[in-house]
Structure formats: C-alpha cells, structure tokens
Amino acid sequence: MTATATHAPPDPAVSGLVPSGQAPTGHTRTTKPGGGAVRARRWRRLAPYLQAAPLTVTLVLFLLIPILTILVVSFWDYDSVRVIPDFVLTNYTELLTSPVTWKTYLNTLKFAGLTWAITLVIGFTVAYFLAFHVQSTVWQMVLFLVCTIPFWTSNIIRMISWIPFLGRNGLLNSTLIAAGVIDQPLEFLLFSDFSVVLAYVHLNALFMVVPIFNSMMRIDRALVEAARDAGAKGWQVVWNVILPLSKPGIAIGSIFVVTLVMGDFITVRLMSGGQSASIGLMIANEISLLQYPAAAANAVILLAVVLLMVAAMLRVVDIRKEL
Amino acid sequence: MPSARRGLSFYLLAAFFGLFVLFLYGPTVTILVLSFQGPEGGLTFPMNGVSLHWFRNLFQQQAVGDFGGSFRRSLALGLVVMVLTVLFSLLAGFAFRRRFVGSNALFYLTVASLIVPSILVSLGIGLLFNILGLEPTWYGSAMGAHLTWTLPFGLLIVFAIFNRFNPAYEEAARDLGATPWQTVRHVVLPILLPSLIGVGMSGFTLSYDEFARTLMTAGSFNTLPLEIYGMTTNVTTPVLYALGSLTTVFSFTIIGVVLMTLAGLRRRRLGRTGGAA
Image (cartoon, rainbow over all chains, first blue to last red; front, side, top):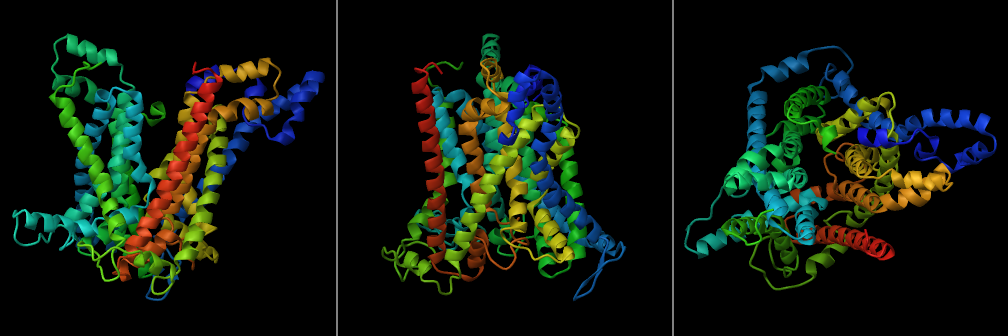
C-alpha cells in the first residue's frame, strides 16, 4: 500500500474515482485556476472518505453493531418464553462452570488442531510441488486453478458427497471387503470424529494451499540455488530456506483454517450425525431453543478465544505487508 | 532453479498432488454418478439402473420443498451481492491508496469480518433485527450478512491489484490532458477489469453457497443452501444428489464462463500490444 501512496503524484487528477457529476471541476480548473484549485483540493481531501463510506457503513451496520448487540444481550436474562433486558452475569457463570462447556471447547480445539496439522502438511506439500517442481507457468496456473475450483462450490454439497463414499455400504467399505482387507464394514468412517476431521480437511485445505503458494512464488530462486551451491541437499533446502521464507503464507493459512474450524457448526452437525459437539454447534442449539442470552454469552467467549488465537498467529506475520 | 531432469522427488510430489486432486474431486464425481440412479436405487452404490428419474423428481415439487423459489432467491441475492461487492471494494481500494483518518481501523474491521465466526454474524444480525422489531428478509438482513463475508475477499483482491498497479499509466493519461474521470474510465478500469471480474465471481459464488450467515438472517423464505440443508435431514433418496449435482454443475458453469472471459480478455490484450505484454 505505502509503495503506491508514495508514488502517487500530489495532484488531484489521480485522487481516484471522481463521480461523473464532479467531472466539470477538472475542466474549470484549466480555465480558472483559482476557485477550481481550491475545490479540487477540498475534493482531494474528501474523496477517500466518500470512497470508503459504503464499505464502512456496511461493516458497521452488519458486523460491528451486531457484535455489540451480542455483547449487550449476553448480560440479559431469559425464561422459557422470552428474553428480558437486564444486567446479570448468570449466562457467563452458568457457561463457565458447566463441565459440558469445557469438554466442548476441548473437542473443538482438538478438531482445530488436527485439521490445522493435516492441512498444513497437505498445503505445504501441494504448494511446494506447484511452486518449485512445475516448470511451465501455464501448467502452474492450470494446476493451481484445479485446486481452487472446488472452493467456489457449495460446502454442504461437498460434505454430503462423502456419504456414498464413507457409508456403511459405501464405496470404501465395499472396496475393502471385496479386496479382502476387512470382513465387516468399518463403522467409524461416517458419522464420527474421523469423518468430521476428514470433511474439515476437504473443505479447508485450499486456505492453506493458496497463501503458502503465494509466499513461495515470492522466494528469490537465487537463494535456492545458493543453498544448493553451498552443498545443501534437497530436504535441507526445503527445511532451511523454503520453510522459513514461507512462514507468512503458513500464518495466513493457519488463521483461516483455525478460525473456520473454531466457529463451525454445520460440518460437525452433518458429519458426526449428532454424535460430536463443537462450540459453534452448542451456540446453534441454544439459538434453536431461543435461549438467546446464553447463546450470546457463549458467542462472546468464543469470539475472545478466536481473537486471542489470531493475535498469537499474527505475531508471526504482518498481513498488510503480504498483500 | 531445480535442475531440468526430474528426480524421484518430482514423481513422489506429483503422485501426492494427484491424490490431493482425487481427494478434492472424487466425492463430487461420486454424487454426480449416483444422481443418475434408477428409480429403485438408493443413496449408495451399486447403481440400480440409469435414469433421469431423480432430476425429474426434483422439478415435480413435492416433498422436496420449494427448490425453484429458493434457487431464484439465491440467484438474485448472489447477483446483488456481486454488484455491491465489486463496487464497494473497488471504491474502498481507491480510498486506501491515499491516507485518511481511520484507514487502519477500517482495514482491521475488514479483516475482523473474515475472522469472526459466521454464526456470530448470523446471531448478531438476528438479535439486532429482533430487538429493533424488524423482519429479517433474504434480500435485506441476509444480504448484509453475505456482504460481511464477500467484502473482505473483494477488498483483499483489490489491494493485491493496486499493489501491482503502475501509476505511470495514470500519469501518462493526465499528461495527455485526461480529466480524473477520463483517467479512471479509460485507463484505470480497463487495466483492472480482469481482476474485477474475479472479485465479482468470488462475490457471487460465496453468496450463492453461504449457509451459516444466512441461517438466522433469511427470514421466512429459504435460500438454496438452507433448502439443501433442510433436505439433508429429511430426504433419503438420490433426489438430494440430483440437486447437489445440478447446483455443482451450475457453479462450474459460472467458473468456466468467467475463466473463458478472462482468457479472452488476455488474448485480446496480447493481440493489441503485439504480444509485448
């Protein structure tokens, strides 16, 4: 960002998007420098605010105020039929003293940790192959697109599509039975923690591949060559040169994967068949029982946990530099 | 660069990549095949004949619910979100090229929008509308909820473009006497066009497939992902796969059209500059 800002000449003409209604300002300036220049300068100062306004208004209305609403409601009281404006801490005390909460957090963290580790290995390997082993840029682009396209299709359908594969009479079980590897269908394949993590990896691996690939493409190839000339073996180059230089991509990918898994409820619900729990699912259940203040308190804690995790990961990387 | 001759590691990595692609696409292919199940067929293999029975069943509107209506709503919502995402993120991108008070705060608010779990956005907007006594609708509250998801992606893409954007083009246009508006209209926008198409596509598909943020914000009419989710709990026939296949093919078609448009734009540009670019 800063690079472009310093390059920008100090002239209102490049101040960005001037609505067509404002166009005459430019013409006036060429004929009558005095008043036009003042107006142009004023416009130049005002323009960024007008340009940023739609984004700001949208995010304030649909993100900031709703989050503040959750915060307020988390202190409200409720009974079986309605929500009562109040200031009580019972929602928090009930939440934090319940062993179910702690067990659910542990479970959610387990999902996040497993998914993070698996997607990291997959993401790094795939990105490394694309960035350093595929020589032609056309093939690089094609294979990269092949990896990204599923991301643009429905998550729910991608989850459903595991059912015929993993089910009791699914493809995997029948293949294994036919091959004589097992004689009873494996029950743990579908509707288990296994299928939940599998779906998380399936849905989120891309969030690791893309930023790591992006980081790797910026690595100066001369460094790799220098390491090789200095006698480094293939794996030493990967471990001592490429891995450290891919850290920003790894951090961004990790933020995506961890936050997506921490806040998820739909994957757990669909893929565990109701046998496992996550914080997101706990909140969704409280919502469906109309226990809004309890759900809100739960949401506030979840948000705090997620933000802490993100802050920890941000220590590794300055995202503004990575764009 | 790694040497031109391919060692064992290349083939191992290529095999890993192949397995990854199989992992990504395998399940989708499975349900594509299974959606052509015969009328007596079930949710798993073997195929019990081949037919279009379940596709026909999908359009007959019975136990399945309002598939047509939810598709139209998702389509309309996706298109509106697409237009607003392109417009808002482009404008904000222009703003971020200069210094303005609160630019850091706005940047972090946008990033926060990616990080905040979807269910919180859903719950927050739902509660807010509830308290204000407003009726949540798919074209009002759900649209806002979707924008909180599509705008950060749009803005990050626009950032990436502007970072690679050479201001010399704008200076040249200005030196030739172009007004600010003319510079934007005839110089900046054409250069940005391919990336803006990318922003538009991400806006559309992210909205079209969004579930969690729609859950509490759509009001009384379902969007397509909500409809599909409803089906997963009470439909046990391959009609579910037929719907899945149909929407997946629809998404692939959109991606295909966008990619072809981009390739076409690129070719035209290369042709015009005599391949110099």
